Amino acid sequence: VRGVSAHHHFSKALGITAALGILIAICLWWIYFDYISSRKPKPGRNQTYLWLYLHLPATAGIVAAGAGIMNLIEHAGSAVNPEVRFLFCGSIALTLTTVFLIGRQVQIADNLKRTYRWGGIIAMIAGIIIAGISLFRLPVNSFLFAVTGVLVLPVFFGALVWIKLLKKGA
Image 1 (tube, one colour):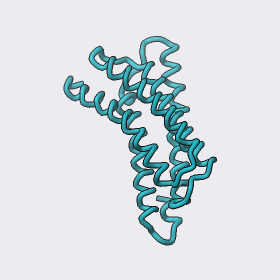
Image 2 (spheres, helix red, strand yellow):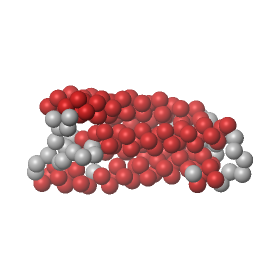
Image 3 (cartoon, one colour):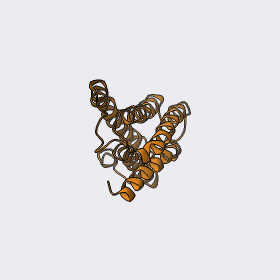
């Protein structure tokens, strides 16, 4: 909202950039809440400490992605600066990696273990691909479409976790 309000004229490119930025933020939170939220850490001190301390880089990644979105909105309609690309893609890759690592520290029902394993693998691959996207000089909206397209897969697996939990009644 702050990034859009800084513009004096609302354009189609600005609207698309803002909408994609909001969609990416929703995807990151969705991935976190479907995989991690309301899950207890595995028994043991090490798993509890890892579960606890891995939330710091996950949160930092989400916050940095928000800062990246604001920068992208400021430059809507032009090519993305390398610093902004690296900040934005790096923060999303950090978030996906830490969500995967936190997911390995939580108690998982037997019927969800396979989905969690594949979801974690997909999240790691998505993080690597998104980090790779940062190497390309693209217009803002093309850049955001590429990132959003890659984020769809971990969101899909997060939705599977959620659906399986609903079926189980947990």
